[in-house]
Image (cartoon, rainbow, N blue to C red):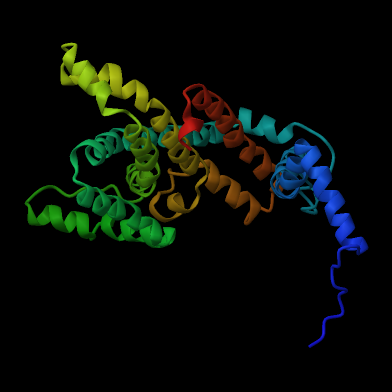
Length: 306
């Protein structure tokens, strides 16, 4: 089939324009870089930043109690409710507490595991363990949470195993303990990978030098390895803390009536209560917490391991 487009000959206007544009980009590298990053920056501003601005603005609106229509007048009523009502303060503190507990637990489990992978495991065993660590990420999030719901039920696998060992049963289904356990399992790979990357960067010669200077294993761990692994730990904590802070599915499936988190309240106000302004105001709380958390983690060098 013959093409309608005119061929690009040496003296055609189209080739001349392309050559002029190429020459302009070569003479002005900054202009070339600006042209390259403009499309993704524009998409970021239009999609992500614009959504955050809309969220921030709608947090100052309210809902008419009679018509359920959104009243677009500025007020601080939503934030005043969040501050004055002890229920919402308890939910916010519970969310921060569980996110902190999950992060600390993941650090305590991931650090020795990553150290074993880097310094002890053979290459073949290291690859096998890394694959097994990442394998749950290939499964749907809902499937993983539902599997833990089956394990933690009163007649689930956990209590069945304890009964076989003649041990007392645990009643942790639909409690905060269940959420802590499920979150630790789900976010564990997100902590392992940054810590593994940080430990892998530590030269083995540093540990040999520490040993040559008379330091024992514990001293080397405390004064050489841990300080150099802090950026990786901080990077992993960003994932575990932020993902727990904004999740609302796991509390719905494995949490109980007293296990509501910020995400649950936001979801309920968007859907059932139809109070989007209040949901937007409550959603600003984890955003503010994460802004402070990211500023702290940046000082610890976390962004170098992301």
